[in-house]
Length: 278
Image 1 (cartoon, rainbow, N blue to C red):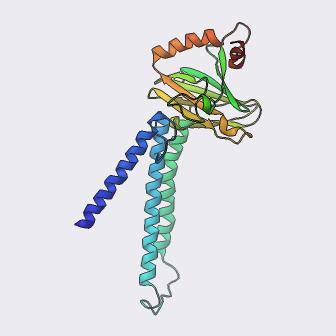
Image 2 (cartoon, rainbow, N blue to C red; image 1 turned 90 degrees about the vertical axis):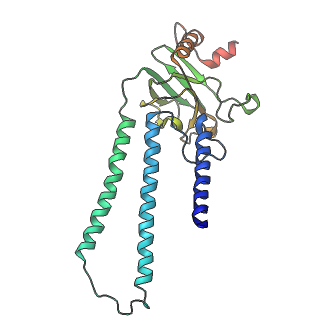
Image 3 (cartoon, one colour; image 1 turned 90 degrees about the horizontal axis):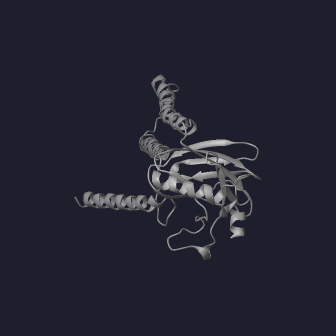
């Protein structure tokens, strides 16, 4: 009875820790004592988390099964318990089992894996398109439909405001509307970079001379952070990605302000030149 109570207590403690980890992850960036993946803010990330947990349970079941087999072999077939070893060389049933079971396991992995890959790679009709250009070492974002672009640089630690995460806060964030399909086009201006936002379940290379694409649909308002995930030089760790998800009204208001702030009649206005003029 005491053992049962201890097991119940342990399970409650683990559940509390896991719940705490999930709560920490609500902010869209890694936090101290966080367990597992960042909490989902898109349908793709929801499927990634499910597939991750599903594989963990499958792997755990296989490991426990192999452990049981090893224990059985150690106990039943050691020299003391089985002094006269069997001379059996073939067992059709066992050979069929060890052929069929791995095939079934691989099928159980492949089916949801291909489904997830299709979800990630099949870009639905976009309501917002953003082009992200990786540079050493910052990002330039373009809104082709609105005809403006701006640079996004990391805010130095000494300039951070209360509540802003270190190494993740930027001077100009991507702004997108909630519950809208956002298509992201990526390329590199110099070397290979990678555009990654864990809470949206997206990570794609930004390669010079090539356009890659991915997509996300943010299901909750808030701030979400990512980083360049391809080693791109000495300041690789200092080119974060920040996405602010807002409602339609706030997005439309920001879009009108951004058109005036960044757009020009000849070419898109860069944030750096704007800041210099100010």
